[in-house]
Length: 325
Image (cartoon, rainbow, N blue to C red; front, side, top):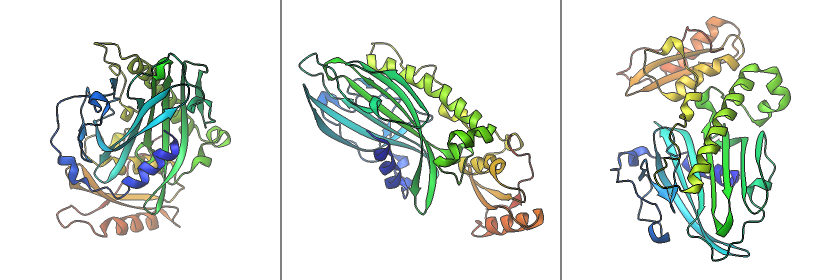
């Protein structure tokens, strides 16, 4: 599994219809009983406790929904049957995170290990691990993915395990940067010089790294398939990395709106957001950046919010709270 495949996943999801979120959940089970993908439609809920070829699946924040899967053969000293499953989490029409998981479906006949693999590739920020027939590594990349007509920043956390007899587990968790308060950015905004100039970005990447290291430990447990061990117990949700908007703590809003409010800290002066709750945790909002005056920013944000505001929603108002430090 590569970050390119993760990017293709996100592009495929850009126009996702959410009607399948009403799918009836099933009991926890393996996705590949007897090495064959069980019958699942797109939108099938991946249950807590589900496994893939015996490997526990990271449960994410609020579970995952099945997108698609493919199988293949890895040919070398061994012939190993492999599979990749793609999953996603959405909030309203917003992609919050994706999870791509690749694993061997059965052990190989010989005791040979792997050569090459994702641990040998260059990556942006964090790379830990060791090479050899037994291989483990963790890395973080920051990429832009085109969703519709916009480039959206994603943080890609990859944890990888490879061992003897073809054992292999490669996982990628992609987090939508907009949910975490970083809109209208590209990888160049996260290079070494940019991080030194922006303590808020550096602090977030440090927190993300600490979470990723805990995630790697959990994936290591999942790789060992120890009976009775909940590999991901104690791992904090990645949503603990999301900013808390104190001025809106007592209100219910969409994750995309809360991320946009947090992103105000990255915007120039004379910028504003206007919003109105539309029910069921959703928020209609509009923005205006870098206007001539604060009044201009407020007026333009209000106009953007009022455009297509549902008649059942209250009039839009300008967010007047503090910017997230």
